[in-house]
Image (cartoon, rainbow, N blue to C red; front, top):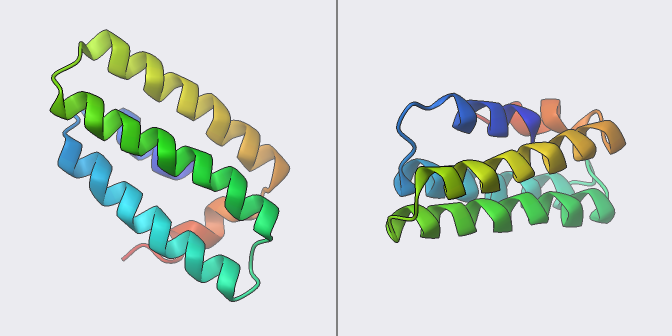
Length: 100
């Protein structure tokens, strides 16, 4: 989760397409990890909050909400992702192993 958020935060010009692609990747990857037993259902549910937040950000971008508001939402998700990384330190590596 942390790596996903860092990648999005590093973009100079974040688009809804970039964010939506990350949501899609996370959705598929987290489902695969849960189904294979590599992450717990609790970890899956916590990570789902990040997915939902990213979907909200993609929507805000489409609605041309101010960059300040989008940045505020992204910062909140980064904080949540750090908390998830602390609670489930192996999750970030497992997610990134699915990235091509």
